Image 1 (cartoon, rainbow, N blue to C red):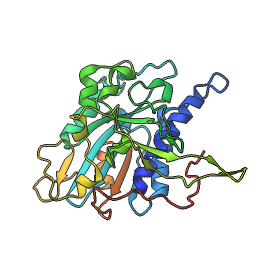
Image 2 (cartoon, one colour):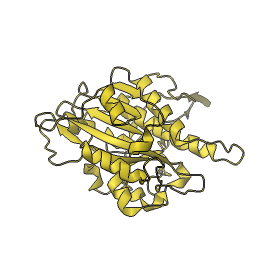
Image 3 (tube, rainbow, N blue to C red):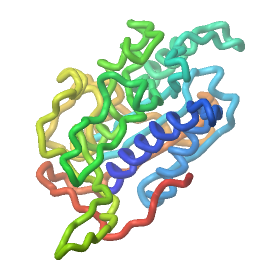
Length: 302
């Protein structure tokens, strides 16, 4: 699935770029605004037929505490999130507590209140480098031909964050899942450059950039309860699955109406960014094999 591949690659790039920006010989500010806009823009560029992206101004976040609103539209149901991005700082400090000057309220309170009013899930997206993570680290066993994707974009329900009041990623990481879990709740690897020896000569080649499912069982997966918080694309497209009472879920065969999608409404609600992903055209097949592209270009814009 191309969208799954994009989420994996952008999370990996976020992780590596943060590590690079934190180096003493670089020391470049790589902030939440830059990371968020780069990732959302790249998702839109890669998937123009599936993704709609709109921005409404940078100062609107102050009122509702959200960086963006995200809607994933499936055939059976849709899923809506209000998302606040937080970058782990160079000293590994996670700053959740933030008073919004215009209202005097906590940013997290604004986020959760607005999400509840509109039936959305309040979510934090944490950006971090590989060395800053403890649970969601890559495996040291690369199985020869593959290298792991780094989990630079982690999602957590803001209600859990509010309850724990973490000041470090370690304090909330067990409640997080990689953002590619919105597409598939498994770990993946990418093919790497390898050498093959034949008749005394070494042939070097770069395999197609793609995704490859881990051949071993998950050893550091999420709490089973967390896996049911964020629905996958297949679950949004499958009419046979029931999801009663799930936060952020809008059943298309019910009286629950998804928030109106108009620019006027978004301005009124003070939403700064909107990303809408229409996955109704994707097939539902749990056993669908992962297909590697033959020769895709380097997708990273940096």
